[in-house]
Amino acid sequence: PWLEDGEAPELPRPAAARRSAVRRLSLRCPCPPSAFAPSSTRACATVRVSTEAAPAGGDVSVVIASSWVMHDIPFGDSFTVQERVSLLPSEEGLSVVKEAGLVFHRSTLLQSAIEQATLRELANSGQALLNCLRCRAGAGPRHHVAEVWELQRRAALWQETWHAPFLPHERSLHWRWVDAQHRKHPWISAELGACASSSVPPMEAPEGWRPDAGGWTVAERPGLCDGAGWQYAVDFCVGDDRWGRSSTLCHCRRRLWRCVFTT
Image (tube, rainbow, N blue to C red):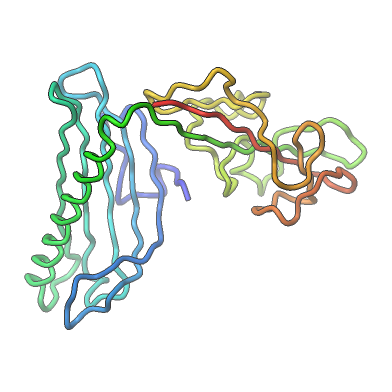
């Protein structure tokens, strides 16, 4: 999920950031061959992506900072892995700077061996990142499809007037425009009141993303919906199985908007 800034104290928002978003991931990672470790481990990563003014001015630089905790390896609860990747525009193209290290919260056996093995794998992953970026360089314009859900609620079943969600327990839904997990969409920079009253997505795309001529439009849904693209349910359920095209006995409705961007 995408997080509010205060929900990730391990990765505070950089003071120089123009824009910044942070999320937490749960995943399984392969482990390097070792007699003391499994072949893979559960991991939790907090990742913050920020844009900052480039040192030379003009274009912006992208900074990706992350903090990793490994759950299944020996002494995995004793340290965190921290990474920072900076993508800096330069006259020759793009400079990539990767910084990484381990932070031990308490002294452990084999601390030196753990640190050396981890830093070796971080160096290998840095080379993999470079290879990926080189493959993408000069590939021409890229197209990206962005989506946002619009949510509305009505106060009574017999009313035809719909509003942005307003019940106290729907705090994250008050924004009206949310991601697939019903959290405030990370592209929203408007204030709550302006966002909730907007009839079209009040989205601010990342720098360098150009919307196609059609802009934001209501997307066709694979499930049942009415002529305006709305689906209805008794509550704001995540997932598709409880939504239908009939508004009878339903207080809530949603529809999907989509826009194609070129970078």
